[in-house]
Length: 436
Image 1 (cartoon, helix red, strand yellow):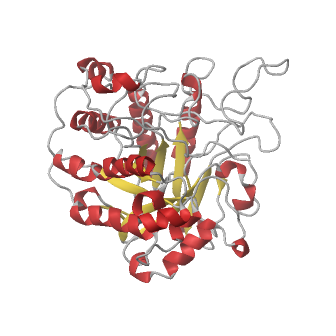
Image 2 (cartoon, one colour):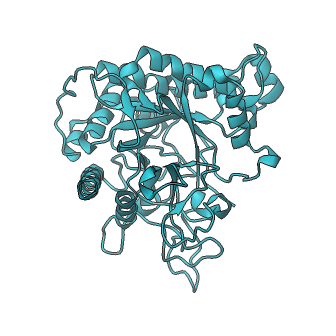
């Protein structure tokens, strides 16, 4: 029913990056290094906070994901990657610095970094792999561990650059085997928690503290079974955390799921899709990505409105509540992806329920709508989906059918648009607070 999960990954040989000065010129940024900033310590987030968080993938090279088969090619390039179709190495210091400069320029507060796929293959033993994970070949295991290492390297790399920006890890809860015990008696999920927990303890300036503890998110994939009686994965994870107070007492965990717009059984009672929809507090899922298309008529889910969840005293006065999470996207696919067959009823190559990057007048209509709703909802965490996944089948065939933000050949440079929208969002939030 719900498509476009982050599953297919492609890989390539080691590469180093040569960053062209024209890329920085295109982005409208200075080519100087990030100015050193004194350590700030962890960022304490409470119900009065307003964080803007960018989803950020550190998956590319060496010996990991390539850009082969994708519709768009990032403008950052490596000479060594040309033999495998072009692209860059996420571990290269020049790329890390350039991305950080871009994030500072846009005005984000934190990056959501992820190791969500093949978690048991990455963290568990050979014994476990032979018993439970048949597709975890030595090369596949090596590729995925490179993704882990690239992601973990963001902590020391950003710290060395002296940035104020923070990191929030997104863990993998898609596969049931992340809760199977390895030969040492621990699970892959526990090992991933310990991996990022160790990085947090060594690099406290990168940490977001929420509800009194370092924040970690757990990605569940798309469609969620709402029934606890079925013991769905989301409920198993919550039960596992409850049964491990030594872990739950150290970190704050939030579960993130995809396409909540099309799962009305997860919405709060009485919700109707005429505006963003509230998730039932009994689930409290954060949104990885939601669709937004208020004019589509494709049965059975249209029109689409993104979701949000509310925290606080739900039985009390409205002022006791606060929207916790809302996710905004620059484009979203329909139920069947981005591209649909041209017919007498559909003269466009796009699916009728897509939300495209560009409006008819060339404006960023989809992102504009998302950010307008964000300003109205005033979430604690505004997540922007997404900077640089660049991986099929998530992406489409042109700029309209790709939800990445990083400067690329299909759309050029959208960083100025992002900066402008984030600034407008912050002004609107400040104006609302001043009025209250």
